[in-house]
Length: 391
Image 1 (cartoon, rainbow, N blue to C red):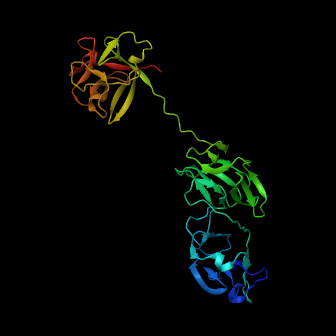
Image 2 (cartoon, helix red, strand yellow; image 1 turned 120 degrees about the vertical axis):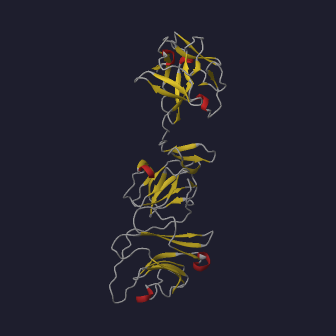
Image 3 (cartoon, rainbow, N blue to C red; image 1 turned 60 degrees about the horizontal axis):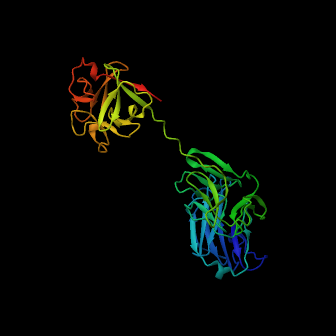
Protein backbone atom coordinates (compact mmCIF):
# COMPACT_ATOMS: atom_id res chain seq x y z
CA UNK A 1 0.00 0.00 0.00
CA UNK A 2 1.21 3.52 -0.76
CA UNK A 3 0.21 7.03 0.23
CA UNK A 4 0.64 9.10 -2.93
CA UNK A 5 0.95 12.79 -3.75
CA UNK A 6 0.92 13.47 -7.50
CA UNK A 7 0.60 16.42 -9.83
CA UNK A 8 -1.11 14.82 -12.85
CA UNK A 9 -4.87 14.33 -12.58
CA UNK A 10 -7.48 12.53 -10.52
CA UNK A 11 -7.32 9.41 -12.71
CA UNK A 12 -3.59 8.71 -12.42
CA UNK A 13 -2.91 5.06 -11.57
CA UNK A 14 0.18 2.90 -11.73
CA UNK A 15 0.80 -0.77 -12.45
CA UNK A 16 -0.40 -3.55 -10.18
CA UNK A 17 1.28 -6.51 -8.40
CA UNK A 18 4.80 -5.44 -7.38
CA UNK A 19 4.08 -1.88 -8.43
CA UNK A 20 1.61 -1.41 -5.56
CA UNK A 21 -0.64 0.47 -7.99
CA UNK A 22 1.95 3.30 -7.89
CA UNK A 23 4.66 2.28 -10.35
CA UNK A 24 4.69 4.52 -13.40
CA UNK A 25 2.91 7.56 -11.89
CA UNK A 26 5.13 10.47 -12.91
CA UNK A 27 5.29 13.81 -11.10
CA UNK A 28 4.69 12.02 -7.79
CA UNK A 29 6.06 11.04 -4.41
CA UNK A 30 4.84 8.14 -2.26
CA UNK A 31 5.36 6.55 1.13
CA UNK A 32 4.94 2.81 0.63
CA UNK A 33 4.54 -0.12 3.02
CA UNK A 34 5.19 -3.45 1.34
CA UNK A 35 4.21 -6.95 2.54
CA UNK A 36 7.76 -7.49 3.79
CA UNK A 37 7.34 -4.80 6.44
CA UNK A 38 9.55 -2.37 4.53
CA UNK A 39 8.78 1.37 4.55
CA UNK A 40 10.05 3.37 1.56
CA UNK A 41 9.92 6.85 0.09
CA UNK A 42 9.45 6.66 -3.69
CA UNK A 43 9.36 9.31 -6.43
CA UNK A 44 8.14 9.65 -10.05
CA UNK A 45 6.60 6.17 -10.10
CA UNK A 46 10.01 4.55 -9.67
CA UNK A 47 10.04 1.54 -7.32
CA UNK A 48 13.71 2.09 -6.44
CA UNK A 49 13.41 3.94 -3.12
CA UNK A 50 14.94 7.29 -2.32
CA UNK A 51 15.03 6.12 1.30
CA UNK A 52 13.92 2.89 2.92
CA UNK A 53 13.94 1.17 6.30
CA UNK A 54 12.59 -1.95 7.94
CA UNK A 55 9.64 -1.04 10.17
CA UNK A 56 10.65 -1.11 13.86
CA UNK A 57 7.70 -3.44 14.61
CA UNK A 58 5.44 -5.86 12.75
CA UNK A 59 3.04 -3.80 10.64
CA UNK A 60 0.95 -6.89 9.87
CA UNK A 61 0.08 -7.81 13.44
CA UNK A 62 -3.61 -6.91 13.05
CA UNK A 63 -3.30 -3.91 15.36
CA UNK A 64 -4.09 -0.33 14.34
CA UNK A 65 -0.94 1.74 13.80
CA UNK A 66 -0.53 5.43 13.06
CA UNK A 67 1.73 7.08 10.48
CA UNK A 68 2.46 10.77 9.95
CA UNK A 69 3.93 12.11 6.72
CA UNK A 70 5.21 15.65 7.27
CA UNK A 71 6.72 17.97 4.71
CA UNK A 72 8.78 21.02 5.66
CA UNK A 73 8.68 23.41 2.69
CA UNK A 74 11.46 25.57 4.13
CA UNK A 75 13.90 22.70 4.54
CA UNK A 76 12.37 20.77 1.61
CA UNK A 77 12.35 17.64 3.73
CA UNK A 78 9.85 14.79 3.94
CA UNK A 79 9.65 13.00 7.32
CA UNK A 80 7.80 9.79 8.12
CA UNK A 81 6.79 9.05 11.72
CA UNK A 82 5.45 5.71 12.87
CA UNK A 83 3.66 4.80 16.08
CA UNK A 84 3.44 1.21 17.28
CA UNK A 85 1.43 1.84 20.43
CA UNK A 86 0.23 4.75 22.53
CA UNK A 87 -1.21 8.10 21.50
CA UNK A 88 1.67 10.58 21.25
CA UNK A 89 3.46 11.30 17.99
CA UNK A 90 7.14 10.23 18.21
CA UNK A 91 9.67 13.06 18.27
CA UNK A 92 12.03 11.30 15.83
CA UNK A 93 11.06 10.21 12.30
CA UNK A 94 11.75 6.65 11.19
CA UNK A 95 12.53 7.80 7.66
CA UNK A 96 13.47 11.08 5.95
CA UNK A 97 14.32 12.32 2.47
CA UNK A 98 15.26 15.66 0.95
CA UNK A 99 12.62 16.39 -1.74
CA UNK A 100 11.47 19.60 -3.43
CA UNK A 101 7.74 18.92 -3.76
CA UNK A 102 7.04 22.20 -5.58
CA UNK A 103 9.38 21.38 -8.46
CA UNK A 104 8.46 17.68 -8.47
CA UNK A 105 4.64 17.93 -8.38
CA UNK A 106 3.83 21.40 -9.66
CA UNK A 107 1.20 23.79 -8.34
CA UNK A 108 -1.80 21.42 -8.28
CA UNK A 109 -1.57 18.34 -6.07
CA UNK A 110 -3.78 15.25 -5.86
CA UNK A 111 -3.46 12.81 -2.97
CA UNK A 112 -4.73 9.36 -2.12
CA UNK A 113 -3.82 5.72 -1.61
CA UNK A 114 -2.88 2.94 -4.02
CA UNK A 115 -2.52 -0.76 -3.37
CA UNK A 116 -2.03 -4.01 -5.26
CA UNK A 117 -1.57 -7.66 -4.28
CA UNK A 118 -1.80 -9.32 -7.71
CA UNK A 119 -3.54 -12.69 -7.49
CA UNK A 120 -2.95 -13.00 -3.74
CA UNK A 121 -5.05 -11.49 -0.95
CA UNK A 122 -3.70 -8.79 1.32
CA UNK A 123 -6.19 -6.69 3.27
CA UNK A 124 -5.13 -3.25 4.53
CA UNK A 125 -7.45 -0.74 6.15
CA UNK A 126 -7.13 3.03 6.36
CA UNK A 127 -9.41 3.68 9.32
CA UNK A 128 -8.81 7.42 9.71
CA UNK A 129 -6.80 9.86 7.68
CA UNK A 130 -6.47 13.58 7.29
CA UNK A 131 -4.60 16.26 5.40
CA UNK A 132 -3.75 19.75 6.55
CA UNK A 133 -1.56 22.58 5.33
CA UNK A 134 0.24 24.66 7.91
CA UNK A 135 3.14 24.57 10.30
CA UNK A 136 3.42 22.94 13.71
CA UNK A 137 5.38 24.14 16.73
CA UNK A 138 8.97 22.97 17.03
CA UNK A 139 9.62 20.01 19.31
CA UNK A 140 9.90 21.30 22.88
CA UNK A 141 7.92 24.48 22.18
CA UNK A 142 5.68 25.94 24.89
CA UNK A 143 3.29 27.79 22.57
CA UNK A 144 1.18 27.68 19.45
CA UNK A 145 1.59 30.76 17.25
CA UNK A 146 -0.79 32.26 14.68
CA UNK A 147 -1.43 29.89 11.75
CA UNK A 148 0.29 27.01 13.52
CA UNK A 149 -1.53 23.74 14.14
CA UNK A 150 -1.41 20.75 16.47
CA UNK A 151 -2.25 17.43 14.85
CA UNK A 152 -3.21 14.21 16.67
CA UNK A 153 -0.23 12.93 18.60
CA UNK A 154 1.42 16.36 18.86
CA UNK A 155 1.78 18.48 21.99
CA UNK A 156 3.38 21.55 23.51
CA UNK A 157 4.92 21.60 26.98
CA UNK A 158 5.40 24.21 29.69
CA UNK A 159 9.06 25.35 29.95
CA UNK A 160 9.56 23.24 33.09
CA UNK A 161 8.03 20.18 31.37
CA UNK A 162 5.46 19.63 34.11
CA UNK A 163 2.37 20.59 32.07
CA UNK A 164 1.36 19.53 28.56
CA UNK A 165 -1.31 20.43 26.01
CA UNK A 166 -1.85 17.38 23.79
CA UNK A 167 -3.96 16.88 20.67
CA UNK A 168 -4.88 13.26 21.35
CA UNK A 169 -5.49 10.57 18.77
CA UNK A 170 -9.14 10.34 19.88
CA UNK A 171 -9.77 13.99 18.97
CA UNK A 172 -9.68 15.32 22.52
CA UNK A 173 -7.54 18.36 23.33
CA UNK A 174 -6.22 17.85 26.85
CA UNK A 175 -4.15 19.90 29.29
CA UNK A 176 -2.56 17.67 31.89
CA UNK A 177 0.45 17.00 34.12
CA UNK A 178 2.27 13.94 32.69
CA UNK A 179 4.23 13.04 35.83
CA UNK A 180 1.06 13.02 37.95
CA UNK A 181 -1.22 11.65 35.20
CA UNK A 182 -3.55 14.48 36.24
CA UNK A 183 -5.98 16.06 33.75
CA UNK A 184 -6.48 19.79 34.32
CA UNK A 185 -8.71 20.69 31.37
CA UNK A 186 -10.14 19.08 28.22
CA UNK A 187 -12.18 20.11 25.18
CA UNK A 188 -14.32 16.95 25.58
CA UNK A 189 -14.24 16.29 21.84
CA UNK A 190 -13.05 12.69 22.02
CA UNK A 191 -14.66 10.50 19.37
CA UNK A 192 -15.67 13.52 17.26
CA UNK A 193 -13.12 13.02 14.51
CA UNK A 194 -11.26 16.22 15.37
CA UNK A 195 -8.05 16.26 13.32
CA UNK A 196 -6.27 19.48 14.29
CA UNK A 197 -6.12 22.51 16.55
CA UNK A 198 -5.40 25.71 14.65
CA UNK A 199 -4.66 29.19 15.99
CA UNK A 200 -6.10 31.24 13.15
CA UNK A 201 -4.91 34.61 11.89
CA UNK A 202 -8.16 36.13 13.21
CA UNK A 203 -7.06 35.22 16.75
CA UNK A 204 -9.46 32.30 17.22
CA UNK A 205 -8.27 28.88 18.37
CA UNK A 206 -10.38 26.20 16.68
CA UNK A 207 -10.63 22.40 16.62
CA UNK A 208 -11.51 21.08 13.15
CA UNK A 209 -12.23 17.66 11.70
CA UNK A 210 -10.94 16.62 8.27
CA UNK A 211 -13.92 18.26 6.57
CA UNK A 212 -13.06 21.63 8.22
CA UNK A 213 -16.10 21.38 10.51
CA UNK A 214 -15.45 23.23 13.78
CA UNK A 215 -16.12 21.37 17.04
CA UNK A 216 -14.71 23.77 19.62
CA UNK A 217 -13.22 27.27 19.73
CA UNK A 218 -11.80 29.85 22.10
CA UNK A 219 -14.33 32.33 20.64
CA UNK A 220 -11.71 35.05 20.36
CA UNK A 221 -12.33 36.15 16.76
CA UNK A 222 -11.06 39.69 16.21
CA UNK A 223 -9.17 39.82 19.50
CA UNK A 224 -5.79 39.34 17.79
CA UNK A 225 -4.86 36.13 19.57
CA UNK A 226 -1.15 35.76 18.88
CA UNK A 227 0.09 32.86 21.02
CA UNK A 228 -1.46 30.02 22.99
CA UNK A 229 0.96 29.33 25.84
CA UNK A 230 1.34 26.47 28.35
CA UNK A 231 2.76 28.12 31.46
CA UNK A 232 4.79 26.70 34.34
CA UNK A 233 1.82 27.33 36.65
CA UNK A 234 -0.24 24.85 34.51
CA UNK A 235 -2.44 27.58 33.08
CA UNK A 236 -3.14 27.61 29.33
CA UNK A 237 -3.49 31.21 28.16
CA UNK A 238 -4.17 32.83 24.80
CA UNK A 239 -2.32 36.15 24.59
CA UNK A 240 -2.81 38.95 22.08
CA UNK A 241 0.05 40.81 20.40
CA UNK A 242 0.41 43.14 23.42
CA UNK A 243 0.77 40.12 25.76
CA UNK A 244 -2.70 40.67 27.21
CA UNK A 245 -4.56 37.49 28.20
CA UNK A 246 -7.80 37.12 26.19
CA UNK A 247 -8.68 33.51 27.04
CA UNK A 248 -7.51 30.97 29.62
CA UNK A 249 -8.33 27.58 31.10
CA UNK A 250 -7.92 29.07 34.59
CA UNK A 251 -6.09 25.97 35.75
CA UNK A 252 -3.14 27.63 37.48
CA UNK A 253 -1.72 25.33 40.16
CA UNK A 254 -0.47 27.52 42.98
CA UNK A 255 2.69 26.42 44.79
CA UNK A 256 2.05 24.95 48.23
CA UNK A 257 1.99 27.43 51.05
CA UNK A 258 5.17 27.42 53.12
CA UNK A 259 4.84 25.43 56.33
CA UNK A 260 3.64 27.43 59.30
CA UNK A 261 6.44 28.54 61.60
CA UNK A 262 6.09 27.52 65.24
CA UNK A 263 7.28 30.07 67.80
CA UNK A 264 8.36 29.31 71.34
CA UNK A 265 9.20 31.05 74.57
CA UNK A 266 12.32 29.63 76.25
CA UNK A 267 11.63 29.26 79.96
CA UNK A 268 14.29 28.86 82.67
CA UNK A 269 13.26 26.18 85.18
CA UNK A 270 15.09 27.81 88.11
CA UNK A 271 13.79 31.39 87.98
CA UNK A 272 10.71 30.87 85.76
CA UNK A 273 11.99 33.64 83.53
CA UNK A 274 12.00 33.79 79.73
CA UNK A 275 14.71 34.66 77.21
CA UNK A 276 14.36 37.76 75.01
CA UNK A 277 16.44 39.68 72.48
CA UNK A 278 17.90 42.56 74.51
CA UNK A 279 19.90 44.20 71.72
CA UNK A 280 23.33 42.59 71.45
CA UNK A 281 22.74 40.64 74.64
CA UNK A 282 20.45 37.68 75.26
CA UNK A 283 18.50 38.64 78.39
CA UNK A 284 15.72 37.18 80.53
CA UNK A 285 12.52 38.59 81.99
CA UNK A 286 9.53 37.42 83.99
CA UNK A 287 6.53 38.68 81.98
CA UNK A 288 6.85 37.90 78.25
CA UNK A 289 3.16 38.46 77.41
CA UNK A 290 2.77 38.71 73.62
CA UNK A 291 6.07 40.51 73.14
CA UNK A 292 7.64 39.11 69.94
CA UNK A 293 11.15 39.75 71.29
CA UNK A 294 10.48 36.83 73.70
CA UNK A 295 9.49 34.49 70.86
CA UNK A 296 11.87 32.21 68.96
CA UNK A 297 11.65 29.80 66.05
CA UNK A 298 13.86 26.74 65.61
CA UNK A 299 16.07 26.43 62.53
CA UNK A 300 17.35 22.91 61.92
CA UNK A 301 21.10 22.95 61.20
CA UNK A 302 21.38 19.17 60.94
CA UNK A 303 23.15 16.52 63.02
CA UNK A 304 20.99 17.33 66.04
CA UNK A 305 21.84 21.04 66.14
CA UNK A 306 19.39 23.95 65.97
CA UNK A 307 19.47 27.74 65.86
CA UNK A 308 17.12 30.04 67.74
CA UNK A 309 15.83 32.91 65.54
CA UNK A 310 14.02 35.83 67.17
CA UNK A 311 10.54 36.61 65.83
CA UNK A 312 10.85 40.38 66.23
CA UNK A 313 14.43 41.05 65.11
CA UNK A 314 15.32 37.96 63.02
CA UNK A 315 18.56 37.69 65.02
CA UNK A 316 20.15 34.52 66.37
CA UNK A 317 21.35 33.33 69.78
CA UNK A 318 25.14 32.82 69.52
CA UNK A 319 28.54 33.09 71.23
CA UNK A 320 30.44 34.30 68.14
CA UNK A 321 32.72 36.68 70.10
CA UNK A 322 33.05 34.47 73.22
CA UNK A 323 32.04 37.28 75.58
CA UNK A 324 30.79 36.81 79.12
CA UNK A 325 27.23 37.04 77.84
CA UNK A 326 25.44 35.15 75.09
CA UNK A 327 24.77 37.37 72.10
CA UNK A 328 21.59 37.94 70.13
CA UNK A 329 22.53 39.41 66.74
CA UNK A 330 23.19 38.62 63.08
CA UNK A 331 25.80 35.90 63.37
CA UNK A 332 27.90 35.01 60.28
CA UNK A 333 25.95 32.73 57.94
CA UNK A 334 26.85 29.11 58.58
CA UNK A 335 28.59 29.89 61.88
CA UNK A 336 28.83 27.08 64.44
CA UNK A 337 28.60 29.63 67.28
CA UNK A 338 24.81 29.82 66.84
CA UNK A 339 24.24 26.04 66.88
CA UNK A 340 22.74 24.45 70.00
CA UNK A 341 22.02 20.84 70.90
CA UNK A 342 19.19 19.73 73.18
CA UNK A 343 20.29 17.46 76.04
CA UNK A 344 17.04 16.25 77.59
CA UNK A 345 16.79 15.61 81.31
CA UNK A 346 13.21 14.41 80.96
CA UNK A 347 10.69 14.58 78.11
CA UNK A 348 10.23 18.34 78.54
CA UNK A 349 13.25 19.80 80.33
CA UNK A 350 16.66 20.06 78.68
CA UNK A 351 20.07 21.73 78.71
CA UNK A 352 21.38 23.66 75.70
CA UNK A 353 24.96 22.88 74.64
CA UNK A 354 26.80 25.01 72.09
CA UNK A 355 27.93 23.39 68.83
CA UNK A 356 31.15 25.39 68.57
CA UNK A 357 32.44 25.34 72.14
CA UNK A 358 30.92 21.98 72.93
CA UNK A 359 31.67 22.25 76.67
CA UNK A 360 29.68 25.47 77.02
CA UNK A 361 26.08 25.44 78.22
CA UNK A 362 23.48 28.21 78.38
CA UNK A 363 22.75 29.28 81.97
CA UNK A 364 21.82 32.22 84.30
CA UNK A 365 23.67 30.93 87.38
CA UNK A 366 25.07 34.34 88.38
CA UNK A 367 21.84 36.28 87.77
CA UNK A 368 23.61 39.11 85.91
CA UNK A 369 20.53 40.11 83.93
CA UNK A 370 21.95 38.54 80.80
CA UNK A 371 22.43 34.91 79.84
CA UNK A 372 25.87 33.36 80.22
CA UNK A 373 27.66 30.35 78.72
CA UNK A 374 30.33 28.03 80.01
CA UNK A 375 30.83 24.78 81.91
CA UNK A 376 28.19 23.90 84.47
CA UNK A 377 27.43 21.38 87.15
CA UNK A 378 24.75 18.82 86.26
CA UNK A 379 22.75 19.83 89.35
CA UNK A 380 22.42 23.46 88.22
CA UNK A 381 18.77 24.41 87.80
CA UNK A 382 19.99 27.61 86.13
CA UNK A 383 21.02 25.57 83.03
CA UNK A 384 17.66 23.84 82.67
CA UNK A 385 15.16 25.06 80.08
CA UNK A 386 11.73 24.31 78.65
CA UNK A 387 10.04 25.33 75.37
CA UNK A 388 6.57 26.89 75.62
CA UNK A 389 4.59 27.03 72.37
CA UNK A 390 3.05 30.48 71.80
CA UNK A 391 1.24 30.03 68.44
